[in-house]
Image (cartoon, rainbow, N blue to C red):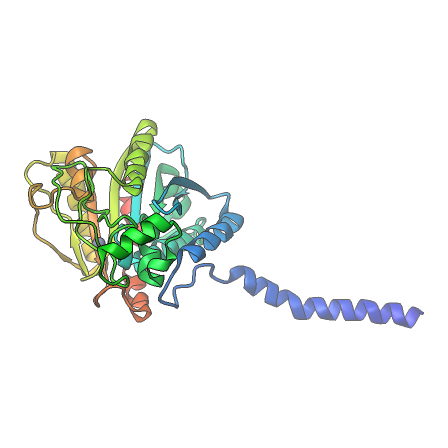
Amino acid sequence: MRVNRKLCFFVTVLLFVIISPGMKSDSKAAIVNSGHQKYSYGELKSDLEEIEKKYGDYCQINVIGKSADARNLYEIVLGNADATKHLLVIGNLHAREYMTTTLCMKQIEYYLKNYENKISRKKVSTVLNEVAIHFIPSCNPDGTAISQFGFNAIKNSTLRKALRRMGGGSRRWKANARGVDLNRNWRVAFRRKGSPGGAGYHGKRAESEPETKALVRWVRRVEKQGKVVGVISYHSTGSILYGRCAGSATRYVKSQTYRMQKLARSMTGYSLMPTESIQQANSCSREYFLYRKHIPCITIEIGHGSCPLGAGEFPSIWRKNKNLVIREAMLFD
Ligand SMILES: [Zn+2]
């Protein structure tokens, strides 16, 4: 009997010694998997649950609206949600550019993991205490589902039938589930253009789409509690960036946008595109932020190949963009 008890104790200790290092490395394992090409809405949802479990003290996860096909539009706030300064990062306005969602999710996890550490000689928590970073990693989850899995991924049968009538393939879809281009649906020199389909249709009127409405509401809500110091909008492809302003921008918007693009350019090596006037870039989100809301804004186009980008491009995109968002926040802290 005594021997058995001793044996039991010995086996328990042995098991603990064998299992515990495994448990330790499990808790250190990354949540977001960037090693495969199709980072899906389902994955986004479960990764956010994991992130909330692991880093709930440092972030807030909200649903800011629903897409046309009833998917959640998630917002992840890093740091002090009551700060007076707020930086907005949006990804995936265009469906087939869904690697921007993977990038935003990796950035979120990386900044949270290093919350008490320094990045570029500054403590992350100190920066985020002054400037809250709000990520909306997927502004177009329906379009992404179309691009990744075809029209059958749309649950609402009325929407699905209408999509089939629009014609065209699904893989290179840019628009939402109603065939509206979510980067052309904004109340800034709005013009009706195109017809419902995979790309380029502005919609019947400005802010006609639930996804655009949710983002406009976001701006209004955050402006009530503080200042939106800047917007970083991730698109792909071409390794280029839009960071110039037309003459009608205020001096403040011009100078802050200049600082944002200069930093982004030095970190990524992406090349700066020429200015577009409001007339050329009518109905676009960047112009809405710059000229209607007077918020500094840059658009960053990641990757080289045609969209959807292959998984092999991610490591180099990650190297260039890993610290970019937190460094942009440091411009305002
Ligand atoms: Zn785009």
